[in-house]
Length: 219
Image (cartoon, rainbow, N blue to C red; front, top):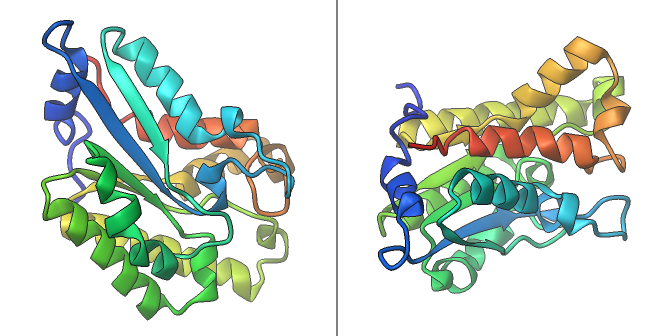
């Protein structure tokens, strides 16, 4: 079953974002995940204003100029989906989000595919059970691509699993992995997309932000 249509999936949320005062309200978008949405660049340096949650916020503020948008980052550097699922109730749903993005693929290589799948399912179902739309993110690339190592092939496996979950649950997919692949195939320079061995550069974050904001068509 294919993922939803970009024009329809967040239509209710986009309508809310389009409302003018006094009929508008604060819209909470929560970005959950690991070091990438946290804004880590060349560890231990953090560059949150060039990370995709902030870039998404800026784009949406321009696209919906009457909206009051609150982008909340609940990401923790070094965390995997199992750890993220354990605090989903208390640290994500407590914000009463209008949307949740989930990004754990890079670090999920530290757990099994089965453990990661169970954790992703738990987070997706907890959000959908409260009628909160979800955008799943496939992982951005890291330097294991150069050696095509076992770590790289594990990243490919987690990518396929995330895509499959998006199709199964009929939720949105921001395919960061595909965006990096397209950019590298076009220009042949992965290092331009990285600020660290596994953290995106500002350009890499821009690619991810574009994948996310594609789900927010302006009316």
